[in-house]
Length: 295
Image 1 (spheres, rainbow, N blue to C red):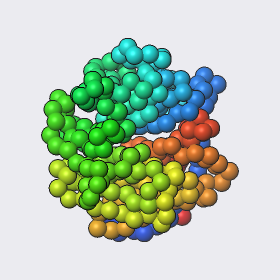
Image 2: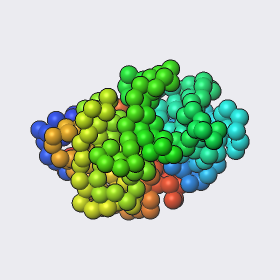
Image 3: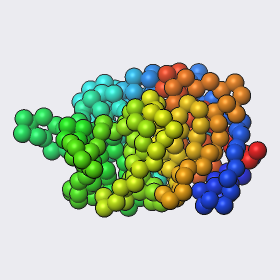
């Protein structure tokens, strides 16, 4: 069943098919061996390994499709491999795993097996305090985009953490509000959303052009995720794909199509290479795997 989605999703993203989908689903987490506390983020490798930012337990887990833990790192603290409220995790095509360690104001890089590889921080301001990284995204070529909340800017770095450019100001056309969600897909570019906003904004990798997508109304909970070719956008009601900046998003499925699936707070989503869609309900501490087919 799940083999149908890659071709269908590709057609939707290409604007060839405007179809709605329904799904069967299974709950992967919590399990008898794993209980999550206020998890905030999930990410997938190309072969389907799922990474979870178990925020309330200050740890990162790597689990298989059955929810079995394969790798783990964490514990409350400041040492490398320890965290204070890890909020965002990005598995970079399986080659590396990046974690926004919110309480420690840093991003830490790990191997696929969650072995520590390095730390990134925004250089201290005049008062000597590290700037707060509120959100980040990775481009396929390895560039890192971070939202510096203290300076109200998005900063682009190369893979060696050398600064390449900035976007944002306190006012005017480049005003950047507090970003809650940020992701990157080559077809759309860097895309972000601020909590409570009725707009999604996107820019090319060099910040030379900014596009705005208006939403039906202000959102209190909104999720952005990326595939190789599309941005996925979701709230508690619908999941959409946005694959062409000149074309409005396309409905992928409605949450009401998932019988008996009650997502109390949608915190993140991801799409595997085989086309299955994963949803994270942070309030319930649950992860669901969806098998999407055309209606």
